[in-house]
Image (tube, rainbow over all chains, first blue to last red; front, side, top):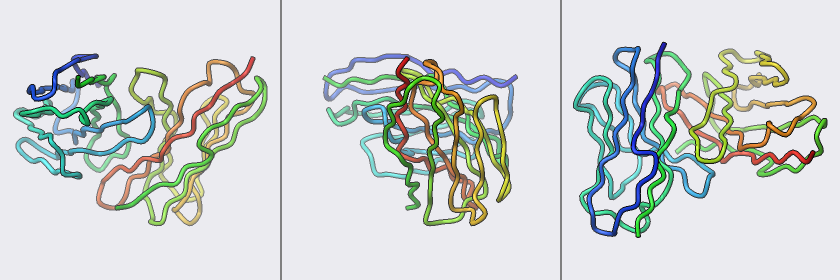
Length: 112
Length: 110
């Protein structure tokens, strides 16, 4: 069966520090991968999605970037965090031309 | 971009009551999905709908894909305390992109 792992679960980082959140999927090949941000427990904002290795589409200009170095690995990064980067970050996967997206457990990021 | 309007934003109901929430879009979607999210967790898929007019149940949950392909609703019958959470609709468009509603926060009073 397919599983998605996202870590860390919580993170407190100072303003100006770098960020790296990792997401991996098991049990499937060539998944579509997504990074979402959720503010205040409501509203999922799509940040990035990827349909293959090295293919990243950005939905919203951000202080963030994403990379997909391997088929089932998706990384969310920042060189310098801002206070406004705080939030709940969710990784998700789906199968191309299939229709359900499945989410990881999320990372609670607090920038102080 | 495409937006999904989800209503109501929040609901406070007595245990045992039925619940209904809906989601509408200005654009056509090929698939409608309903998720439930509990605090500190990722959303969990409840029901997936693939065809206009489709009515699908999952236990006490029933969801329908609107005929116009621009809306969907979710009903929960005989609510129980563990139904508490935020329910999200999501639509998949022709470009294989997911868009989410703003969520309905459900509180069940025992």
